[in-house]
Length: 399
Image (cartoon, rainbow, N blue to C red; front, side):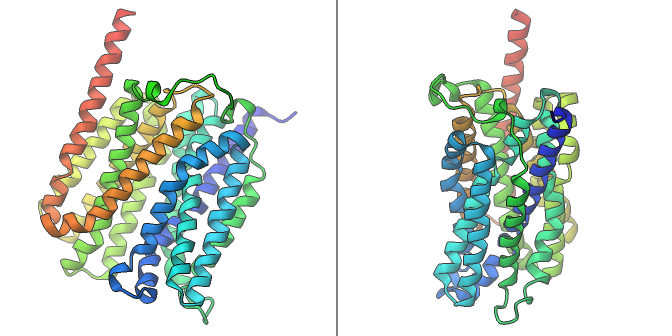
C-alpha cells in the first residue's frame, strides 16, 4: 500500500510541473503570437487576433472542461486538455506558419486556449488531492510554477524561433506541443483519491443558491476583478512604454519582473493565508493594486513602470489565490465541478473584456488616468471583503 503522505506530495509535484509547462505555452503566445500575426494577417489591425483567439478558447472551454472532468475524472480531463489543446494546438499553429495561413494559425491559438481552459483547474486539483492543512499551500505551489515559466516562456519565444530554419518563428509552437506531450506523460502518474474527484450525483444545490452565499460572492469578486485589473494594465503597458520611447529590451525586462511578481509570492501566499487569514491577504492585495495605480499616475519613467508592474503582479497573486482559497469553502463534493466552472467562466469573461478594452481606454484616458480608473473596482473588492469579515465575526459572536 502506498504512503498517503508521499502520494499527496507526488500529486502536487505533478500538478506544479504541469502548471509550469502550460504557462510556458501561455506566455509564448502572449509574447510571440502578435508578432507572427502581424506577418500573416491580411490587415495589420488583426495582428493580435491570435492572442484574442487563445483567450476565447479559454473562455468557451472552462465550464465544459469542469463538467467533463466531473464525468471522467481529473486525470482523464487534464490529459485530454493537454492533447487537444497543447499538442494539437501547438502543431496546428506551426502548420499555419509553415503554410502562411493566418486562419490555421488562429485556429492553433484557439486550441491552445482550450489547453488553458483545462489547465486552470490544476490549482483546484491541488486542493482536491491535498489534506486540509496542506490545501492552501498546495494551491500556492501550483501557482508558483509560473516563476519558472516567467523565464522559459520568453526564452522559448525568442531563442528557439530559428530552430526550424524553413519556418521562421515556428519552432516555439513545436516546443509547446512537445511540452504538452511531457505533461501528458507526467499526468499519467497522477492519482486523485476518490474523495478528491468531482462527484457525480444530484445531491447538490442550484447555482443560484450557491451564488447567493456571501463567501462565494467575495471569492468571485476578488479573483475576477483582480485578474481583470491585472490583464488590462499588463496589456496596456507595452503600448504605453513604446509611446514613452522605451526600447523593446526595457519593455521585456519590465514584463518579466511583472510575471515574477505574479507568481514568485505563490511560494508563501498559502502560508500567509494559513497564518493571517484569507480576508487579510485579499485586503493586502487590494492595497498593492492601489499602490500600482498611484505610482503609475506619478510619471512614466522606467522606474515608475517597473515598480507599478511588480506591485500589480503581487496584488494579482494575493487576490487570485485568496479568492481561489475562499471558493473551496462554498461548495460540497457534488457541487465542486459546476461551482469551479462558473467561477473560472466569470474570471475569463472579465479578463477577455478588460483585455479588449485596454487599448481603447489607454487611447481615451492616457496611462495615468487609466490606472486611476481601476480604483473603484479595487475598492469594491475591499468593501466586499470587509463586509464578509464583519458578517462572519458577528455570526461567531452570536454562536
